[in-house]
Structure formats: C-alpha cells, structure tokens
Image (cartoon, rainbow, N blue to C red; front, side, top):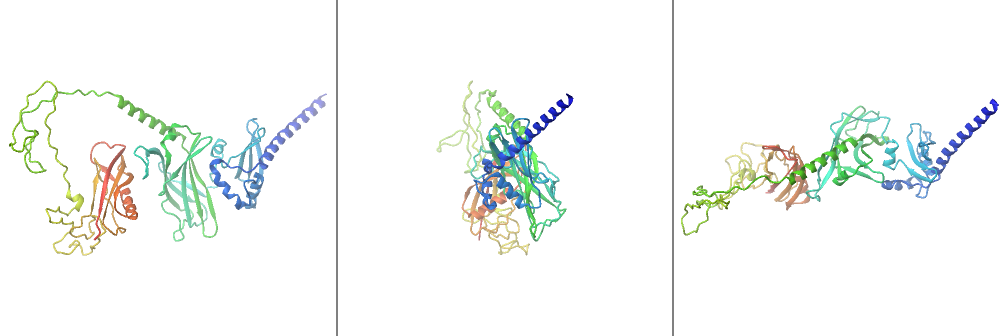
Amino acid sequence: MRWHLFILGLVFFLKSCQFIETREKQAIDICKNSKIQFAENDIFQYFGLPVRGLSQDSKWIEFANSLAKDDPNSKYKWDAREIEDTGVFLVSFTDETNWGQNWEVSIEQQIVKHINSNEFLSRKYGFSRLDKESEFEIVELGKRTLSLQKKNSYFSTEDSKDIVFTFNGKVINNSDKTLISSDLSGELQLIFKEKVISGSQEWKSGFKRKATKSRPWRPNETLEFSIRTSDIEEIYLQFEPEFVFFVVNLSVEDPIGFTYNKAIGEYDLMDEWKNLKESVKKKKENQAASELIPSTETSKPKVATNQAVTTKPSPINGEEKTGVETKKSEPTKTVTTPAKSEAEATTQKVPEPPKIDQRAVMGAGGTSGKGTQPASGGAQGTSNAKGDEGKPTSTVDGRAVMGEGSGKGANSGAGYSLDLTGWDFASRPNINDRVSIRSGRIVFKITIDSVGKVIQAIPLEFNVTNEVLSYYRQVVNQINFRKQSGAAADFSTGKITFIIKVD
C-alpha cells in the first residue's frame, strides 16, 4: 500500500513539474512569436530595425537572433518565471551577465510588453541600464538640488517656472583605454504608468573638459562635470509620479575602435520630489494667507502747516517753489490753511529728479558736456593723443566698452549702466568686444536670484547684430551682484544697458 502511495505521489509531482515547465515554455513561445512592438515613448527604436535587417512586421525571435549575431562571443538563453501565480511571466533573453532583453507576458490575454523600452515596467520590476562592470564611475559627488525656478527662456512669461535639477561631480576612467572622445549627459525622469516626462539638460552641461586627440582621457584620470536639467513645467507638481529618477549616461571612444555608451549613474529622487512639492505648497498657502489679512492701519487726520513746504532751490529751474501752487504774477508767499478734524490733502514736496552719475555712463575719468561743448572721455594724460599717456602699451580700440586700458580718447560715449534696486556689481562686466563693427545700444531685462546670480537675461531694446547681442548676453550671464543692504528676495528684476561706441 505504501508503495502505491509513493508511486502516486511521484507521478503527481512529475506532472506538476511538467505543468510548470509547460507554462514557462508557453510564455516564451508567446513572446517569441509576437510582433515587435516598442513602448509609445520610444518610437525611435523602430528606426534601428532596418539596420538589423528587420521591419515592423518582424517578430521578437528575429530581433533576439540579431542581437546574438552581433555578439557571437556571448552565450544568450531564453528564460521565464511567473510573478506570484498571476499568470503573468517575466520572459528574458540575456547573456551570462544577465544583460539583454526582457518582456512582460500574459498567457491568458496573450499580451507581450517590451520592458526595456518601458521606463515604468523597468522600474517596477527592478531592471536597470546601469553598467555593473564599473569601467567608468562617478566619484566626488557634489550637492544635488531639485528646485522650482523661473523659466530661463526668451519666450517665457513672468509667471512661468521650471522644475530644475542640478548635479555635479567627477568621473574616473577605470578602464585601460586612452579615450579621444567623451560625452556626458543627464536626464531627469518623472515616470508615470502611461507616460514619462523628461527634463532636458542645458547646453552648458556635461564635462568641463572633453577628451580630444590632443588632450586624451587617460586611465585612472578623472574629468569634472556639471549638469543642470530643466523644461519640466510647474504643473507636474500637482501629480504624483510612480518613480522619479535622474540618469547619467556616458559615451566614449578610443582611437582604435573601442566604444562605450551606457548609464553610469541612477539616482532615486522621490524623497526630493516630495520635499519640493511640500515646500511649494506651503509657500503658496502662506502667500494666500498674507493676502487675506486685513490692513490694521487707520487714516489719521493731517494738519496743514503754516510754513512753506520747501525753501530749497529746485534742481529743475533753480527758482524757489513752495508746496502751494501760485500764479506767476504773484511773488512766492507763505500760505496758511486752518486745520480741520477730518483728513485733508496736504501740500507735498516737489520730488527731486534722480541724479545721474556721469561715471556710470562716461567712465570713471569722464566729464559731462555743457551746452555745445562735447563731453570728454576717460582717457588719462595731457597730450592730444588718444589713450592713457602714462601707459605706453595702451591701444586705440574703438570697440572697447568703458574698460580701463582700452585706450579710448575724448568723446567715446561708451559705457554701461545698471538699474537694479538694492543691488550693485560684485564683479564688473568683463567686456572684450571683438565682434562689434558699428556703434549701438542694448538694454537687457535681467532677473537674479537671492545670491546675486543671473538666471535670466532678455533683450528689450537693441540695434546690433545677433552676433553682438549673443556676445553681450554672455557677458551679462557672467556678472555677479551683491546686495547693498537688507534681506534679499528670492528673485529681483532690473535692467542693464550697454552703449557700444565704434570709432
């Protein structure tokens, strides 16, 4: 009897194993015979099919065979495993290092989804494009910051903002290759179930020094980088993505055919995302609450005085004016107004017009003109020659803008001026104009952050070429400002004007 039970149990066990193996094989067969279909947000994969001799009507088995053909030294195999008795299988075609292609296969529904081209499924199942061989490694990480900042674009409005991520560090070459080309890029990803929102990196991002033939990237050498991504609008803070990741990709090559193009860094930013959402929410709540607080100030009756408001000569015409308007035929006199219990309009001081510091326009050594006499420039010396007499090395450069040593003589009229309330230059504009061929004027509207760094420069007025405008925009972006007094706001807006004089 015992033998009968043992044999019966063994048969049942073997049948079960065969059933499991059959389901796994069934999932693999479904995957192999399905038509190639990439994720909607990765349609560029289709453009690579003709290179492999495939088309959009090809099947995944043909795609897998082409991969194996490209790498004949690696051994690939098909595998499948069920996800917690759900009837959904993970099917893979990978080499010895588990590097390859993966799919999600539903046996009942006969649905196959390519995991590699689907960021949501990749993160859901814990797959990563990160290179595990560590030929190149990110080291000496700096501060990483996720913030909301005003949109830095010529077409942006005052209220438009971007979600910005900044990241910096160094990459070490752990390989034995001497590289002549290197390109580093970063991408901020908000991963939803049906869509991925990506933040593109700004054009200045990447390696601060790229590898070249004349200056290659050698083994065990590090290259410094800085990445800043933007172009994700503020509206996405209203939603909760499934995952938030920042991915760093590296592409290099050496002189004799070695190439490398893989992700060398992946960073989970979900905590930073939640902190940013909470910070922005509180800021808006505080702003809304402050707008609802009623004003507690009460109007007080103002009593007119029995004296003239001002006895100081007016800077406009030099004649004495009082706060009370009088007829021209009558002399200036004191007017007495009896006080009343209710508030009345009182006389006011005539405001003095702002005084213009001629040094801001003409240069530190310049003087203002009077009548028909032209203003003199900032050149130093007593002879009639242009340039600084005490500086034999000075040159006559009609394109220079207000720089000492530019050799500008009388009547230059060139310079720059700043209109930014509460701020002054921490570093003066570093101007070395070699592109201007005629005189002109440029007015930029600038926005700076709380530490005095320029985050936006928009041309308001200009009569110069695009090349000159681009050069002076670079000059503006390199200027730093310092707060004159008091606390700095998150953002401050003003204007900077350049007067270009070409002899």
